[in-house]
Amino acid sequence: MERGLPDGKHRMAVQPLAMGGGRLQKQGMRKSIGSFGVALSLMLGACHPTGPSAGVPGDADSNLPFAEIAADDTITLVGTEPFWGGTVQGASMTYTTMENQEGWTFPVARFAGRAGIGFTGEMERKPIILTVTQGDCSDGMSDRTYPYTATLKIGDTVRTGCASTQQHPFTGPEHP
Image (cartoon, rainbow, N blue to C red; front, top):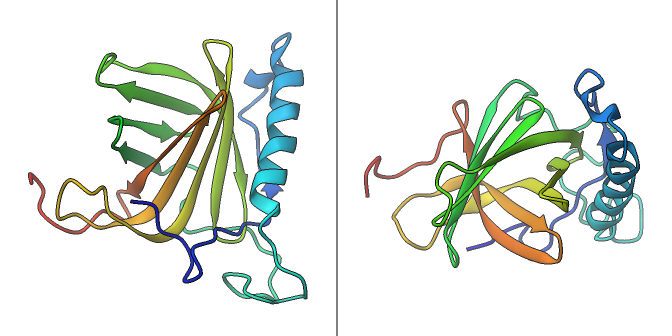
């Protein structure tokens, strides 16, 4: 289900972007988001090899953040084993499961790296870290191919899946 670079690793250099108009300044959230940002930076930056351009995705001479998914794009998430899904729209994420198909909606902060983007937030007092990275992805249940891989960490639980946007949709049957 999860695919990344040819060697199977995901690499991103993290650069923070706008955090959504001060919504994240609520008591307690500031400390949590700071911790998430550090964790996200470590998680995404830990996979860098040594040397200035050794295996780094994208243009190794560029320090520009990933721009293929705009801040106002809606990202659709799908995952299996267990089934989960959701969307990210602006500074808001909705996470759905088979047990809660209406989902939980909560604020997120966005970070852009070299080969994808990350989001951090909190759902029911559990830290959330979502990374969306370049690379073909199959949900394993349909004949669809998605342009991005999604990795979602809720507390200590990690879920993998696929992602797409309107500008970069999945390919394959609409209703498999």
